[in-house]
Length: 629
Image 1 (spheres, helix red, strand yellow):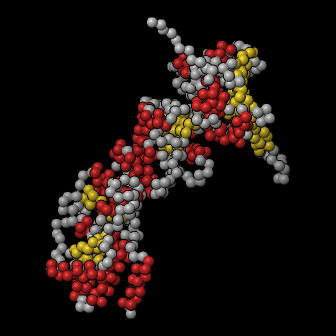
Image 2 (cartoon, helix red, strand yellow):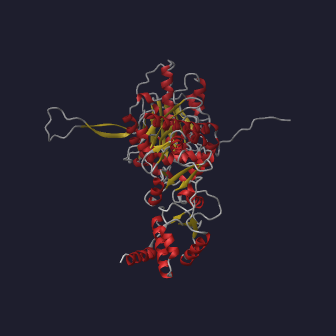
């Protein structure tokens, strides 16, 4: 039996790199600047431990575009390479220099911020270049080296002409990639991927206005000077300790992230953890409406200050994708598919941590300044309610600070609400009935009737509230939610004492027949109920179960009995048999008058419910004028 080693041919490596290595060719600039950053940070570390006997100074990375020569130059003042290192790191495809460096200096290099855990980053240059040159000089006492390759497996290596340490990469841009010779395109990419790189990045110069001399005349122009155009902020807020930042620093960074966003965020959450994974970042709560289609994908994901993506689904819990800000973690790879991220163990831990951190911050805000928290509730509730629905761990924590506002402007936690209403709103089966409205204007008459009995009514008007109520009813014991117009109050909160009807069974049957003769609309189910004589004679209600199912369908879920939004309208027409008007209808001798009284009474109930529109409303108004003549 023979054994041996398989040799991988590189003849076809460059076409593969160009076509398959990265989905987007623009990524080449991110990769090359990442490598330049690595080289600079390596030098910083080696000088700090005394291994590199050179002055670190204030190095920068420079990007230059030579449009006429069809070249892009990337120049760093980092560690540089010797001839042997060029052979090792450049010619041996997929060998990661950064990986080796980290292994060698494992104890002291953890905080150097080195990005390059990828060996093929440099070769992304061949996605846009027909030829690539490297001119490099090591910090060690060795001559400069000049390497070049035209995209074939062959390369040239010779002595280079470079006096200072560092590396210059020259890309000869291919004919199909000339878009990258435009200054505007390069500025766009630098702003997108390298806005917060830890080393200053120079791209051209800019004119800076200087203060006028003291003896200058008013009409004299202010002096100017040309300065380096540094396109990045090497020390963004999230890289600093929370104790070193003031509120204005967080506000300033928000404007830096979102220059076109004029509204200030409500508050921020500073993430900072180093175990069991590394994660830093700042999340902002913007003002949110009840619109579930609010723009998502506003959180930016970075790996050691290198932009990765603004689609953080799977890394950030779904309910928090409505927030804004930055998350930075070296534990998230730069170039992987989203499905990989969603399955990755470290990513799942990050998601759980962010959920916990957000919940803790909200709880802290609630405890420390409840009045301010209540003022902000309507702007943040959609995130909290969404989180309570989608994340069980968040639900448990949010139970302490989630608020339930009443129509009178009071705010209660669930525990406070239970204590407040338990005596008045517990029914005969010991179940706590929580009354609510989704529209205080449209359901005003029902609210007033409930308030007259001393009941509290919550204002629950977010689009997902039906789902949340369902969750609360299944999570807590002996509670139910009922909208104030779901039934008449005596049925919503059934007590032991029931009203006795003034009508006999025979009279009830006659009344029902009279009503059915006049009411043609079969969406109404007639219910004869004995209520207080001063309660409304006719009330239209919408059964809680059916209406809630319709609400849930509109926002997803709610069973599959009907197509989305196609469940039929169903109403109950509740007739108060103890009301004087109902007795008059029953005792009216002429059919015409009885019909007019029934139509007028039902239309008044429909008007109260917001159901009277169009021709029916016109007829009602005409009939009303005739009756008051």
